[in-house]
Every structure is written in C-alpha cells, then in structure tokens.
Image (cartoon, rainbow, N blue to C red; front, side, top):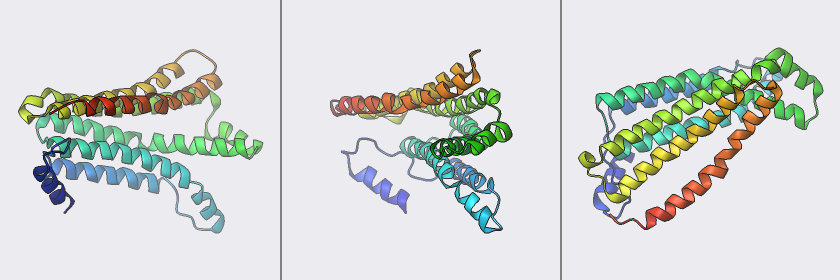
Length: 250
C-alpha cells in the first residue's frame, strides 16, 4: 500500500526532487528487511527474561542502551530503504554489496549492544558517584586495558557499514546515464555517497587513535569523544548541500 502511494506520487508529480525507480518490493529488499528484523530480535534476546522483581528492574536498565542501538539500526535501515526505492537495483553487483552490508550488521549487533550498555552503566555510575559500580565495570565487565580494543572493534564495524553504503551510492552514481538521473538526482546521489563516507571516517579516526601506543584510559576517553564530531561535521555538511541543491535545475 505504501509502495503504491509512493509510485503514484513519483509518477504524477514531476516536481519531486527524486523519482522513485524501485517502488516494487523485490526479494533483495524482503531478505534485507528480514535480516534487520533478526538484528532487532538479537538486541532483545541478548537480555535475559526477568523472573523476579529485582531482575525486572535490572532488565529496565537495558531500555536506554536498547533505544540507542535501535536508533542506529533504524538509521541504517532507512538509508537502505531510501537507496532501493530511489534506484530499484536488483543485479548481482548490488546483491553482493548488500550481502556484505547485512553480514556486517548481524556481526556487529552484539558489540554495539555491549558498548552501549557499558557506556550507559559507566555514565550512570559517574553521575550517581557509585564507586562500587564503577569498580565492578572495570574489573568484572571489562578491564581498562581492553577498552581501546573495544573501541577498535566498534569503530571498524561502524566504518565498514557506512563505507559499504557509500559504495552502493557510488555504484548508483556510475549508472546515472542508464538510470536517466536528473542533475538534482545526480547531486543528491553524490551527497548521499559523501555523507556515508563522512559517517564512516569518524569511527575510523576513533579506531586508528585507539590503536596508538598510548595510555588505555586516554585512548578510551579520546576515542569516545571523537564521535562528538558527528554533529560538528554533519550539520554544516547538510546545510551547505541543501543550499547547493536549491540552486540546481533539472
């Protein structure tokens, strides 16, 4: 039903900035949606089912990390959805790259949940000044010496996912003529490709910084703060490209 409405809108409104070429759902997208659903399920089952009230309270502590993981997962899913509805690809090359993307998502869902849970517990202990909880985190959950490796695992995974999305948009841009992309559509395709490159560069920088032979505490702290570059980089990037898009004619 949604696809039918999008198809009617795309065909009947020539003023749309991007004509949808993939309004018919394909088996590639159906499989991908299934993988995203499995990833979501893995987030849920990674927490044990509470059997007592105390365990229920402990389970509720997973709400914030779960929400953060879901937000990141939905960000990737939405990009995936937009890509296929824009271009409608179903050839072997896209299937291969899409398979790599799905593999990365499934493989890194647990490291993502672990990191989000760790950060939530760590900041909760800091804000409540719970020294016992803080000691538990860095003795029972993870040693401080291992935190740079954790940031490397997460950073490499996040960078790989966004770079894979960038490759998909690069393929689309190279097929601009066969897709009959307009000037605006070409520009928007380039913007999407560059946006994913930027989204991947930031975790890669964090990953490379944490590989340096420096104090683990410093590596973990600075490696985490590097992610605050996202709003500083992506907001001006979005504003600038929105202005440039308004000046482009079809």
